[in-house]
Length: 230
Length: 304
Ligand SMILES: Nc1ncnc2c1ncn2[C@@H]1O[C@H](COP(=O)(O)OP(=O)(O)O)[C@@H](O)[C@H]1O
Ligand SMILES: [Mg+2]
Image 1 (cartoon, each protein chain N blue to C red):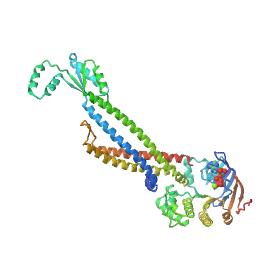
Image 2 (image 1 turned 90 degrees about the horizontal axis):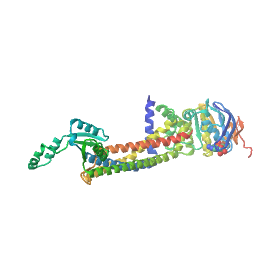
Image 3 (image 1 turned 30 degrees about the horizontal axis):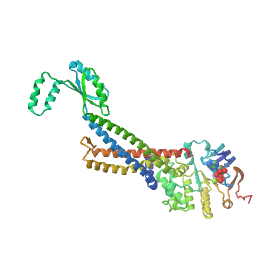
Image 4 (image 1 turned 180 degrees about the vertical axis):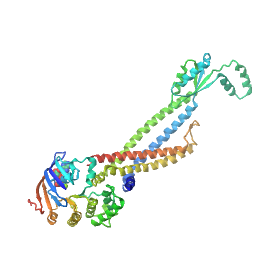
């Protein structure tokens, strides 16, 4: 489902963000990527969603060689994966309903189908009554649930989340975690979640990949992680 | 099938929504368009009327060419006529025989006794055969006149009112300067508008990135922005059109359709103001289209 082989990333300014990343994630897995700030977590996500291209090595997601994608094909590739960010990234002048519908409009889905799909997604993320609200009228946790709803609306095989709980308090973070677990269980969606919230990682145990200075330093199949310099 | 209609309808709907949901930005862009179009409108009205004056004057000016007494044979005159017609800028050549000229001269007097007094000269007719030449608009009468004078068999060339000719020359320069100014100002204004639209789209660069993140292809992202630009251009044209419509009619009524003297007649308001209005609307929309298209495209190019 997701496979990185000998992936290196060096930014134009000379910063080496990732070294020799080898990684294999199967369909239906739920995996954490943890590590300190600047360890290359976001860079890995950007390589996976096509925002950046690896300097060396191969990034393969849902059978597509992401690094080889032409500029015009990147959006089409993105329809296979859902991406969620720390800062939600909702369209500010669109309502909740329209934000979720947008991900379906881009694939030219029939209007009636869009309407019922958006309703069921809003129900899944627990925002049944917020369809006409604009993002700035919602709490952070609600906005993130809209973003997750939008990311999974077209039933992608993979959901990638870069610190989805980074801007949320612990209670809301827990809610988001439960939602992601629900999606993982209900649709068999492969979920890759970047976080540095160790409480969360230790509470909801999953396979955990640890990055440090651009290297994978641990890949704990049964999860749980104790920071060693603490 | 419905997806085809959707592909056309959706950007239009989204474009309209965009204009209203980004009210403040739309307003600032539309204002830039408005100011520009008012300036363009003034120049259009000005140059069109100056052009009208020139045309009016040029119509009054024709060149009378007298044929030498010793070149009055039919072959000679055919040759001269063809030679005149061959000159660039000549619109028409009308022949008038010396008998016609004489009659015309006599008819120009009102009282019978004067007419009588000229009768004895009919036999020895002192008039010349003549060609009357009309020239195209925008041609230099003096130059053509001297070219005609150089043709073998032409004795004399006269053209109406040196004053008129000078005035035509002056108006022509005014028009040229006005035209150049209008184009320069329009270009400047288009840059201004393009810049305003660019700024508003820059403010929405985040939106464009999000749209690409969610899987929207470039065309899908661009279309609503372009429609929005066209709409803003059209909205910006409203005030200039209203000002042109009422302002020009007011000016026309105020002056009675003439300025300075009867020679300078203003263009009738209808359909002139409709034409100007349509032109303003089209300019506004095209500028909106071009401005938004290039601004969005620039963002789409370097976001992956
Ligand atoms: N666009 C970029 N250009 C240059 N350097 C970058 C860019 N993005 C990230 N970096 C650098 O790459 C390293 C890894 O960053 P990042 O992947 O964002 O880490 P994390 O998400 O784990 O905090 C950091 O040193 C960061 O400064
Ligand atoms: Mg990061």
